[in-house]
Image (cartoon, rainbow, N blue to C red; front, top):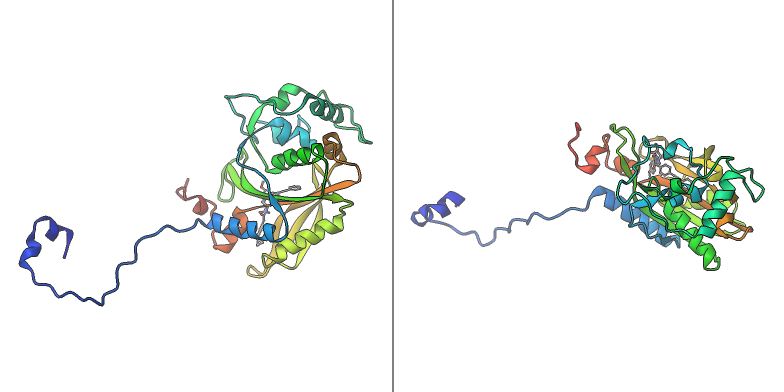
Amino acid sequence: LTVEMLKDDSWEKENYKVNINAMGVVPEQGYRHPLNKVKNEFKQIFLDMGFEEMPTFNFVENGFWNFDALFQPQQHPARELQDTFFIKDPKTSHDFSDEYAERVKQVHSVGGYGSLGWVYDWKLEEAEKNILRTHTTAVSARMLYKLAQNGFKPKKYFSIDRVFRNETLDATHLAEFHQVEGVIADVDISLGHLIGVISEFFKRLGIDNIRFKPAFNPYTEPSMEIFGYHPMLKRWVELGNSGIFRPELLLPMGIPDNVRVAAWGLSLERPTMIKYGLDNIRAIFGNSINV
Ligand SMILES: COC[C@@H]1[C@H](c2ccc(C#Cc3ccccc3)cc2)[C@@H]2CN(C(=O)Nc3ccc(OC4CC4)cc3)C[C@@H](O)[C@@H](O)CN12
């Protein structure tokens, strides 16, 4: 029985035997995207470890929360056109208090809290420029500021969402990726706590042999790169980056000076590519491979 036979009514001249035991045709159905499957796995681990999800739905940020509040100086190369997407319209936004902006201006330009600062002329116009966020750490900054302003209490936050970098595209680099970030804020958090939490996080992902290497980030000191021996790949793999947020970031927010905030970050694409044996990142985003 074909579509043509149904169309030209030739089906009427045929004889049929109906097999009433034949199974129906399995209907075509949707499938979860690999990135979302890995995202849900990571989300469940964070929730099981007592982390609360941060609100990361706004992709547009301003330079203030994405860089200045994180003590990232305005002349830093990451803030230039070739690394950051700037928004034409609306070009600027100002969703931070003048008192807080003044403390950020001070700590950038002349230092404070025992720091020399970055010693340059900090400009409000630079901070007001709208961009596509380059990391979800901008949302962590907003959450920590709110935590400080509403009366600090110990918190564990996480975020898993899209971030945008104006980078040259290649097989493993797109102009965007999903950042995964964990943040723990409490009195007297030490590097040992951070190492312990990161170890537990990756252990639940099947990597229980991890090592740390000193690194540098503008907004964390000390900072560590994270490496893990991947049981499936049978080799060491770079897992992400981590560190303790600097006092120049926390104190202008009003976070008490006996509180430490530690954080770590990784991506969603790298583990998904490994899990599904993909060697080209575009296989994940469904663009044609040879873009
Ligand atoms: C510009 O892109 C940077 C991205 C992305 C990354 C790196 C650092 C951070 C961060 C951070 C941070 C640091 C301090 C405080 C707060 C956040 C976030 C994302 C991955 C981070 N990386 C990465 O995801 N690697 C990775 C993660 C998991 C994994 O398997 C799962 C356990 C089973 C396998 C690999 C490391 C590399 O892929 C690196 O080459 C690419 N990195």
